[in-house]
Every structure is written in structure tokens, then in C-alpha cells.
Image 1 (cartoon, rainbow, N blue to C red):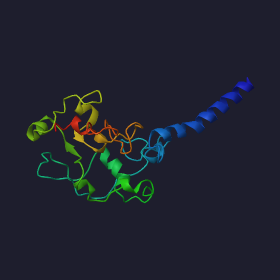
Image 2 (tube, one colour):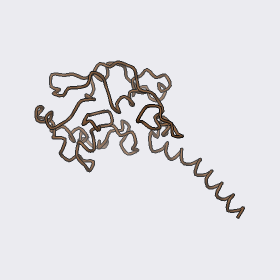
Image 3 (tube, rainbow, N blue to C red):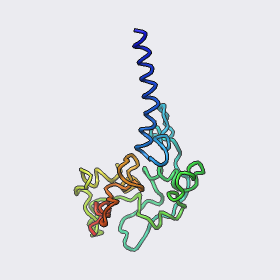
Image 4 (cartoon, helix red, strand yellow):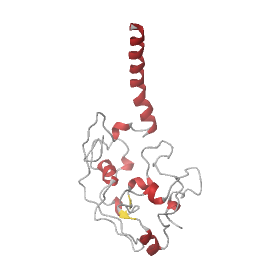
Amino acid sequence: MKLNFVRLRLLLALVGLLTPAVVMALAHPDLFGCDGCHTPHNVEVLPGVPLWNGSETTTRFVMYSSDTFQGTADGQPGGDSMLCLGCHDGSNPNYAWMNPDHSFGTDELASSHPISFVYDSALAARDGALKDPSEASTLGGTILEDLLDPESKVQCGSCHDVHSSSVGDSLLRGYDYGSQHGPGLCRMCHIK
């Protein structure tokens, strides 16, 4: 009986040592494991976001705009994008060492893909170059189910999947890095 107890303790110790290494290899294999974004022990730093290891950014951003953008973006990022920008806004010195190329200042959102806007059937009809969000995505469901947040908004997580190790350096969903025709991700929503 005592021998079984010792074996069990050794097994649990081994699992405890190996689990962080496996998780680290899956999330951001070149940077950190789960604790880059999450904190253990049932901590809830932000309401409704269990295990979040950080704080929302207080940075004010210049949001995307163009003559061809038919959506109406919120005045500032919202939803899950605020969690991403808690590190990627470039203001957090604790994360500056990770990958300086993936931190940006307050004007970067003005020149990248728009976020924090409602993507619905009305926008698709008005725009003419967007698929209806009820159409199938290449991820198994519809655009609405697979890519939009609960408020039907496009957020950072619509294109970037931080919980997958099979999406390449920029964590892009459905992007074929070895192909000359890589914009499969873009074509999930865009007609051309």
C-alpha cells in the first residue's frame, strides 16, 4: 500500500513537471505557455474573464477608416480585442522583449484590418464585396459562429487563433503559409 502511494506521488510529480512544457509548446512555442495570457488558481482579474493574466489597455487608438469601409467601427476597440491589446499596444514593458515586431503604437489600427464593428447581413448587402455572415466558413460552421464575437463583431480573434499551434507565425486561421494563394483566410469573409 505504501509503495502504491509513493508511485502515485511520483507519477503526479512527473505530470506536474511535464504539463507546462507541453502547453508551452502548443500555445506560443517560441515565446511562452498559457501563463503569458492566463494565470492559474481560479483568479478572475477582469470580470467575466476567468484566469486572465493582465489588464485591459488604457491606450486610446486611432481606429481604421477608409472610403471603402462600409461598417461602423466603435470609437475604440472592444471585446476580446482589448485583451490582445493589453500586451500588443506596445505600452507594456513586461512584454516588449517577447517580440517587438508584434507590438504597435496607437496608430496601427488605422492601417490594419478594422476591428470592433458589427458584421451582419445588412453590412454584407450594403458593401457588396462581403459574404453574408450566415454563409459557411472553412472552419466547419458559419462566419457568424466561427469568426464573430457574441455581439456579431469582428475582433482580433476573428482572424488570429492564439490557442492553436498549427496556424503559423502570425496565428492566422485558415492561412496556408506554403501556398501562393494564401488569402483563404481573407476569402472566408471577402468575395474578392
